Image (cartoon, rainbow, N blue to C red; front, side, top):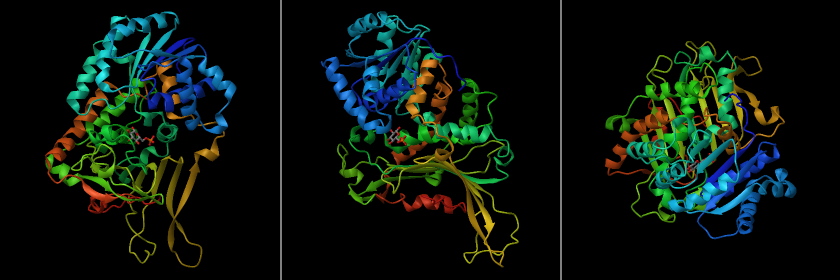
Length: 490
Ligand code: BG6
């Protein structure tokens, strides 16, 4: 994550240029980079099959961008300056003959670095990488960016690795997990490795369990076709949740060097206790939403969404107890929790500390007192909150949890960049620290595969939960059985 020098000139080529990711996220992110002076010397090529003019493309781009760029950051003149760097090229990624035109365009725009961002279905990765290589567009000054889903199981992921690896070296490949672009996730590193006081406590001796949650209010929207073949385990756990787990559990890296960080994450993935059919039944819960009310609005159930078969067994909710078999974490459950159509949108990591070994203060009527816990809220707000027990004023020695709050928004006045801004700049600079290495990807698939297989063989299918609730009740049982409960500050 160290600041490598920024190239004086670069080309950024977006395959899937008319798609949602490019128009809603990537172009707005590059606009912000432009405003901050980071796009100097950059040219952006948006590729698509549609026979539209440059003006027609930019007209759509501006209307999408305006939806996603905060009004306070919008400036007509700056947008006009920015789009002067952007060209639309009608190129069909599936037609190898079209790549000669791309090569011609790039030859007219010589640059230190050329980045090919493959915002397309993974089934196109092979033909794109092969056709680029045929034109000689895979030299050491080129990089290729892959968006998830990187396969639907270990074999298909390995096939992608093999196909891309035929033409590009691992040092040129950037696998995006957009969670790693979030400021809050990088702040987790700062919290752990920029302060010494937590280090002695950050282990099994003092921590009873860790809960990592990514909850969403949204359903699957118009993505039925994609989601039905994917499900929450592949969509959220195999990537985002496992990456968060790695950042919580990894040993301190020796530096911010890309491989120093990724080597430590790898060790965590290697230490994850593998699942078998019995532990899948014991330690995982899957659910599928039924009609309900979210944010005061009635919403349909999963089976009523577009492109979903009536007998679908795809999970929209997952809760898992994961275990890490190493000296630091043996015996500490890591509970992973994600779902769609839950009561609120939030992502957080909650570290629960052990209770005191001997109670000298009177216990409340419930007979238990919550031990200290550290809440690291990643979104929508970004804060760290440490809950401690403190004495209630008065003549008794009654204790009550109080919180010590650190709200990042209030502490820094500088603008917080969107995830893709940070990631795009890192790609252009050639910094791989926040990208997933091939061996990490493989281990993550290895770990989830027995869960996928056991679920596929189980005729029961997912449990149902009403939209607007926190998922099937058995997910709470996953913790209560171990003597824990979900952190419920929402
Ligand atoms: C994506 C998933 O990777 O992450 C989506 O495909 C999900 O299904 C999204 O909604 C959540 O990202 P964020 O940044 O909104 O929490």
